[in-house]
Length: 286
Image (cartoon, rainbow, N blue to C red; front, side):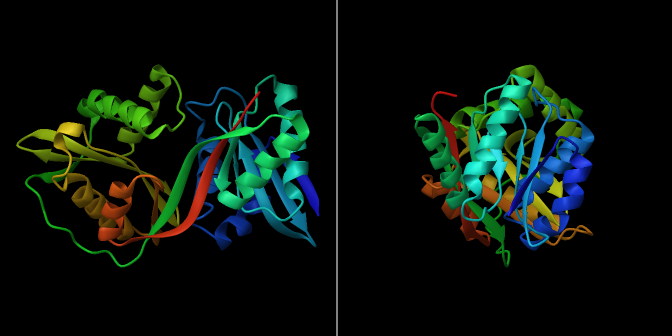
């Protein structure tokens, strides 16, 4: 078993392409980070680093670290976590940026977290436990008043406000507000954010990230005063249905907070099925 490192996204992509394709929904975040690195990240604070592990000339695991965010990992073979963690700490020292944590399938994330504790004597803190869902057979929900539309340039302020509110409520790590505005503007310019309007007023938002053959839904946000009326459920259904009709897209996925029974129930009602638990663990003492 051999661990490889590169700061060249193309070298990494060439190595891991088949591995990512073998589990397209589970590894879609890692696929997305390749696409983002190629386009130029809007919220990263240092150059990304890429790792992959092979055994008998076959890739069996990979990871990407995009500061200031936790390192994203795939499933990992036994004994790989400690070596990966050592290499990531070396990278952190080289670029002068703290390695804040790990994000990935629960067993892999917990293995890297245990390696952190073994290496440093510090513990870890569970920031978020998430369920990865994949769309199965879509089930059309009741249609509330209003209609879906694609968000445009005039909606930047409300979409930024709601994105920042989503970040606060969900606990997801994000960049500062100026960088988040750039992300929102980029998302809207690509037609990747939809709003549900009632009498000309937006009441719910669903964005998505396209990394074929999987499209990842999120963030989904409805302001408190508009909740429990079915807006997010219907909007997520309509966005998902439209995306699955797009050439080159054959799967749709989304993440939910394990501890939020409301969101888990809403998405399952329209046909999303849980496939895997992911954990975001922050390194104490980093």
